[in-house]
Every structure is written in C-alpha cells, then in structure tokens.
Amino acid sequence: MNDRATIDHLLHRLSAQLKLLYPEHDCDALAERIIDLFWSNQDKVIQRQDIADKHLWDESDIALITYGSTIQSEGEHSLKTLHRFLKKHIGQAIGAVHILPFFPYSSDDGFSVIDYLQVDENLGDWSDIEAIARDYRLMGDLVINHGSSKSQWFQQFLSDEAPGKDYYYTADPAADLGQVVRPRSHPLLTPFRTAAGDRHVWSTFSPDQLDFDFTNPDVLLEFIKIIAAYIDHGVRIFRLDAVAFLWKKAGTSSINLDETHEIIRLLRTLMDHHAETLIIITETNIPNHENLTYFGNQNEAHVIYNFSLPPLLVHALLTGNALYLKRLTRSNPPALTGCTYLNFTASHDGIGLRPTEGVLPQGEVDQMMATIQGFGGRLSMRRGPGGTEKPYEMNISYFEAMQGTLEGPDAHQIDRFMAAMAIMLALEGIPALYIHSLLATPNGYEEVNRTGHNRSINRRQLDYDEISGKLANPEMVETQVFTRLLNLIDIRKKQPAFHPNAVQFTLALPEGLFGIWRQSLDRKQSIFAVTNVTKEIKSLSLADINLIAGDLWWDLISGQSITDIEGGFSLSPYQTVWISNVKQNPA
Image 1 (cartoon, rainbow, N blue to C red):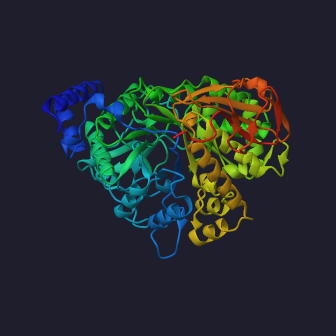
Image 2: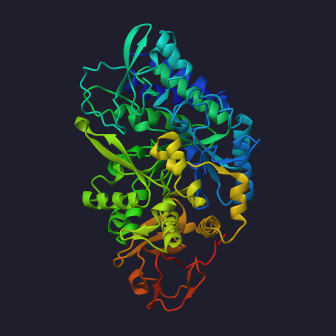
Image 3: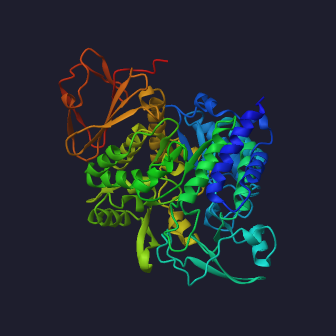
C-alpha cells in the first residue's frame, strides 16, 4: 500500500505540469481530479524510483498491426475471428497486437470515433478485447486530436449544451491561419450552424473529424477518464493518434507546440506511476528531426514511430542505393533508457512522404513516386502553405511496392520484400508488422473503388477460411512469405543483440550493401546484419566488418559457419546475413 507521501509527491508534480497549461485554473484541484479519475485504486500508484524495475521490452517483443475487421468469418464477430486466427496461425511468434480503432465510428475506418467507451458492435464487445489482451500485449488507439461529428459531444456542441458545447476548437476565418501545417487538402475550418450561432470548427483531417479544444481542461479530464477505462479493459500500449496537432494557436503552425509536448509529459507522468506497465507511442508522421523531439528528455513518448524508415527502405530497394537509408540509421540517436523506436515498413496508412523532407532529394522522391504509381499505387495529397497541394503519402501494399525496381517489375519480388523485412527486424527498436505485409496481400482496387479513398488500397478484409486455405498450401505466395517471415522472427527473438536498446552502428560497406552492427547490452553477442539491396550478386568482404579473431561465427539465417574471417562470400540478390558470434540464445 502506498503512503500519503507518494500521493502528495505525485499531486505536486501534476499540479506543476498543469500550471504550464492552465495558469488561470486551480491546478491543485485539477491534479486531485486527475488522480481520482486515473486510479480507481490508489494502491496502484507507485513511487517514481520503482519505474526502473519495470520490464518495458526486450528482443522478443514484436507487434502485429491489424484492424479488428481484417479477418472475417460469416456468423462470427470479427474480433473473435481475429483472436482465432492469431491463436491458430501466429501463436506466440508475435507478443503484442495493435488493434486499430475498434469503437463505433462514422468515417476514416475508425479514426472518427462516435463513442470512446464502447466497442463497435459489428466487431464484438469488451469481452472480446479482454480475451485478446489476456493472450497478447494489447495496443490501442487514443484518437485524441479529434472526434466524430456524429458523437454525443458534438451534438451537444450543436445544441449549445454542456459539456460538449465547450469541447471543440473554433476559430474566426479571418484569423491568421496561413502558417498552419496541414496533412490534408480540404479547408481547415468547417462551418456549422449551432444554437449559439454560426461557428467554424477546426477540422485538421476532415469535416467529419472535429478537433477538440484542449485549452479547456475538462477535455483533458475526459481523455484521462478514457485512458483509465482502456487500462481496465486490458490496453497496455497507447498509440496517441495525430497528437502533433493537439494544441492550436492562431498565428502559429499549430503543430508540435510546447503545450502539446506538455500534455504528453503529463500523460507519461501518470503512466510511469501506474503499477501496470504502460507505454505511450506517439503517432507523429512528420520530418524526422521533429519526430525525434517526442522523446522529450526521457519524459514524453516511451516509443516513437520510425516514420522515415518505410519510404527510405522503399527507395533503397527500388534503386539499389542504400545511401539515404544509411544516413537515416547514422543520424538517428541511440534511444535512451526507457525510450526506443517502433520500426515498421507498412501500416493502415500509406508510405509517408513528409519524413523524406530534407532527407531525400526531390528528384529521387519524384522517381520513387512514379515507380510506385507504375506498380499500381496511388498518391494522397496535403495542403501546404499558401494553399498549394503536395504529395503526402504513397498508397500501395508494401508487398506490391517490392515487385520491381526503377526499371520495372521483375522476378525478385519475394526476395526483395524479405530484404525489407530483414532490415526492419534487425534495426534498433521494436519491430511492428502490418497484417497485410505478413500475408503478402496485393493491392485492393475494389476497396478503393468502393470507398473512394486511396488508403483503402491497403485495408482489405480477408475471409478466415480462404486465408487459412492459402496458408495450408506451400505453393501459394502468401504461404511462402508468411513462412519465411515467421522463421526470421523466430531467429530474431532469440538474439540479445537485437534488444530494442542494444548498440547499433551503421557499417561502411560498398555500394549496394546495407549493414549494421548490433551488440547486446551485456556485450556478449555481436551481430553483423548485412543485406544486398540490389538484384545483382554482391561480394561481401568479411575483412570490412572486422570479425574478432578467436570467436566462432555463424550466419544465423542460413546456419552456415564462417571459418575464414579474412575471406568473403557472395550475397545473392536481396540476400540478408545475420553474422553472429553466438549461434543460439545463450539463455
């Protein structure tokens, strides 16, 4: 049981943070309300020094990203179907599952939430969520920037009734909004006729997704109550959706503002003092130097998305030139204790182009976009300063993005795709696999035609019996990719050198080769992870990677032993080697 001193210390800290956000309010009283909302049982408040004892992650942590409705079976709620698929086909190969928004919604495939405290009845109910959470570490979305125009809160806004009438951010169209950074091309403000008169509501993402007003502390309290409910239902990893846009101010860019960072710091304070191991991941699809700021001083996000990885990995494998990928891995600072990266190649969104800004020359970006369009991909746009439209992301199945090079499609699609996965799995951080990558799903043109949204190309819904049948047939492309990926995952999970915070160093290798050196936290294991990013045979000189004489070395993927550390060998097109001085997990 915690003594009163622990609670008092937390109250003091929260009050100090709240004063930076709400200087006109009684922040001591706000802090008391937050503790009452966040902890139904104050015995679960832990002292700050206990946090170091928490097990946040290790080399065995790998996440799967999926919609609750991706795997379907007639007559069964899809969350039950998903759980059945996970248990039968994946088991414990993957330990964490990110179920994309599973709430009632009105648009954007779940990211326009109508009711934050209910499960979409088409998917199932809270018992289905809790069942998955008992078998897997559950990651859920906190869609914190905006909510649905069909929600009760917004209907209260229209009627000028409490509490919703004060929950949405409004602005004068004549205000100075020219600097606002946008991820979309529609107008920033959406007009509504309300009982209090005509109002213009800030709508960063769509006229159906209305932005909350976090200058009102009651909005923050509502979301703290929502977080507490999710914890009770088994959510342990919180993805803060579109959080970079949270705080708005006329005359500014209204992105990455200090107040936004302070709210994340406040949520981190709460989660770090909870007896459960809770993790914050910030979804900030922005240039890399801005994204890195969301680590704060080890006091904001535990994990940030490595948003630059998907487009730079595509570029490297389309061109056979890993220069820009190497620059990324060299420039990303090592994550400090309690922080790490989330590495991924694909998600429910497209392959973002904003993270290439200042990293990839525009000519290279244009060439990459043209190639992806040639592979059946689409482009989504955003509105830049002055109203100009710019490409925001490439929409394509990641497997289809690997069907060829700048020269066009070829016969190396599976090997090229596996090269991308192998690089991602080896990097510092926690790997996350999108379910459609795991299953090598092709582009979903029918979905695009049905919804009218380019992002639907990578959001297909699959029949459980059909996909199970494919996975039972070794001749199917889906099975070949699935089997190879699970094998690679199994190898990775046993290597201490692949701990999310293990040392990483980018190797200086000849053109066409990308490589990193990882070393375990106890310095007992080294892995040299090298990939041929071209469709040509490449020679790897072992002298270039300085294998230590006297140690025995193996390629963990092929099982081949390496006896001549001064020699070399050939890498087939898109082949990866994980050269280690420890053949198996020493544990």
